[in-house]
Length: 406
Length: 173
Image 1 (spheres, helix red, strand yellow):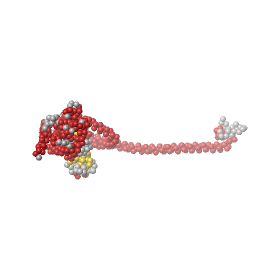
Image 2 (cartoon, one colour):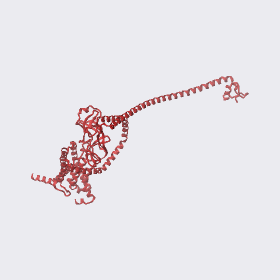
Image 3 (cartoon, helix red, strand yellow):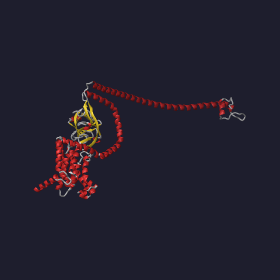
Image 4 (cartoon, helix red, strand yellow):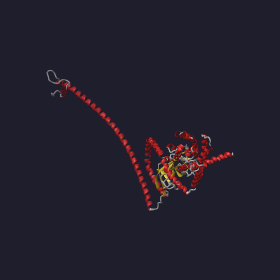
């Protein structure tokens, strides 16, 4: 027993204290150093922060370079995939475009009205600071869903700023360096965003599931069961970090395991390349002359857009009526054409008949006159008149044998 | 063995291959530990560190592992020093196993590796959850341990084969 314990101690000592031929530090020394780093980091020790920032500045750039070839392969793969989907996507986009065109004007009115109402209740946020940043690192780990941007405190980025892809919320800045910053993405398990569910205006907190979706927390379950349609998830603006109404996603289905509402995000977090970092501030309350002017301008805009919508509606109605009239005229035209053709046919038939009758009448007249005047016209061996059946003979009969036509 | 560290290309590759692989896996943006399947992830760095500390400890310096840990923390946004501590403890466990082993056996190494990563992941979970208030999915963490454990066998064979093919049979063990 004694020997066994000795062996264990010797093995442990050898493993942790003995320096190898190529080793400069013992394992225990480095473990001790790591622990110190962790403890100081937990106590927010300034020197550790500086070390961390220095490492981050170097590592992010190095990682960007090391990942270059793989990113190129990934980009090409996605490009090929997108080419294969191009035709179907084009058809789908055409359909969508038609729908969006019709909805666009209504949306404009709603936006302007919304803006006016928000101004009235002093909840209107305007963009204070906005800039575009490139995604340096997109580490798709199941433990931490975050991206690193190429903008930092040098570019006036601050912790807590919202990060958007187009109009959709991506996450918020959680870590700041001089030249870079880290963004915690919405699917991360540590991300907590106050959201509003529409329709119904239900308030909740959204967290990530650590994978691709979001989950709702702190919500009364029965409120969601009332809705059978898709539920839109937007930022609620509670807490004042984000402005309200930034789109996040839709509630897709009910998870049967833990009965949590699963949110399907509007954007694909694996495809982020450039993002917009924004901060919002409240617009000053409408008190002065310029604000009144601004309100007046908004009202004018609403009026103008409403007029445009009305004009468009009238034009569409007119077009509809014109189309109907055109179709009717076309139908009439076709009917008349057919009728004309029919009449033409009848006319030509009648002409034929008339010609026939005329010929028959002439023939009858010839035969009648022939019975009377044939002697005056017929050629015999003692006169020099006309041979029967010739045109001259026929002419002579019609002239009752009076004149010699030659 | 001395011939290996001659300044020829083969010697340089032999010497720096494990450390390059470690830094590449740590710095790489595309995480090949995680292929996008739900719950599928494994820790390649654990496998690499444990394998080379067991088989050829001269080729993975402790300082390099420490620095790789710092880099990993930075890339993943973890508190600085967490990965370094775990990596170094893994080195210690491998060194202990090497010291007590007379006749190497892959299955024993494998099972020892499993026990070690279970303990180390628990430690990492505790540090992150209790001291730094990081929320970590327990199921993901457990799946990661299981897949890392399973993949150790595969990578162990692969590294053995690779070293035999490229550096000859003398260098593999």
